[in-house]
Image (cartoon, rainbow, N blue to C red; front, top):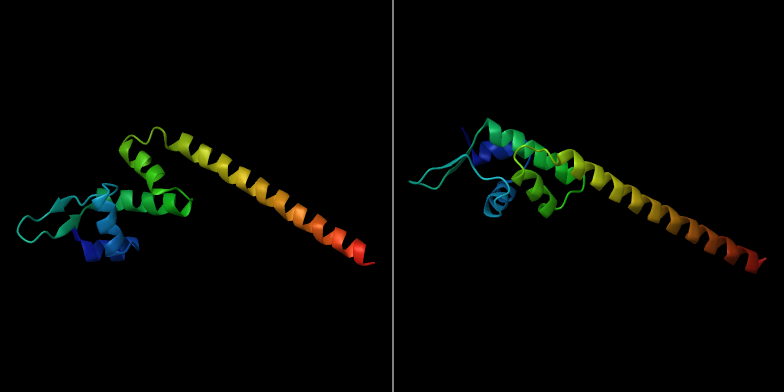
Length: 114
């Protein structure tokens, strides 16, 4: 078992983030000592924390991460990742169109000034 400060060091998550994740039931400690309320995490918690870090880096919202964590079999994770990829691709396509519009606008301004 790892104290919250050790677990924070291991995962790169802050103690505040770990407390917040516990509060919203995203990543709860494996054990809370009833005498002093110290939070302890185990190796299973470490796996889940690394998964959450990866999901956050991939742009998952708290709600999306919560959906993944509630599905303990992770059966829908592939589906969620594919959906996230499609949304990102759509956003990239939209940004590309905006860049093209900006380029066209800049070019039209140059033509008028000539």
